[in-house]
Amino acid sequence: MDYLNIAIAKGRLGEKGYEILKQIGLECKELEEESRKLILTSEENKVRYVLVKAVDVPIYVERGAVDLGIVGKDTIMEEDRDFYEIADLGFGKCKFAVAAMEGYSIDPTKQIRVGTKYPHVAKKYFLSTGRHIDTIKLNGSVELAPLIGLSDVIVDIVETGRTLKENGLVVLEDMYPVSARLIANKVSFKFKNSRIKNIIRDINAIVGEEM
Ligand code: PRP
Image (cartoon, rainbow, N blue to C red; front, top):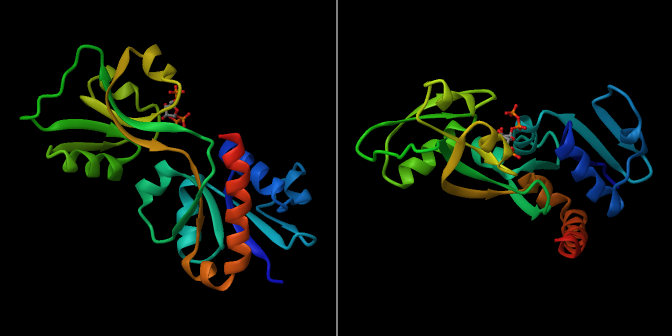
């Protein structure tokens, strides 16, 4: 049997994703050891894990460097690449939202300055609602932008809402729901079809129970 190659992100998303894959027989002891290796293999289960940055998971999968990947819907929407999204893993639930300082209201006749780590998602959303924006791409601490006058609003993911609250910001508009997803390379899906189909079936059984 061929190896199944899976890209997972370093950190919490990858760890939780791996826990699910482990439950369905894709355990990899090497991955559980403390190390700095980036490719971890289980000869026994014929699976190889590749550790990448979360934002890079879609391109590894699109190009067929790996068969499968675990990634957040936020990254999927921002990267907008070509692959199949094959399962909702049911964790990492949050939402995309437009937020601003308390008391601010959007003037639809004016261009809105939007601070965000997700410029593609922000443009698509505002365009779909017929509004023009000036996108300001940031790489983190997005909540700071309206506080300091860099932007009028932000587009970001909101989980508990704590970061917004502690910085005096409020949600103006809910945009899209987000959760962790399993994605597949299109060619792998065809050529490793029975193995991937079984994975989808087993994941849905587990996630269905937990959700
Ligand atoms: C995300 C997001 C918010 C925060 C929302 O940031 O950008 O800042 O989490 O979570 P909350 O609603 O539970 O407060 P992340 O932790 O990914 O850090 P980053 O800003 O450095 O990307």
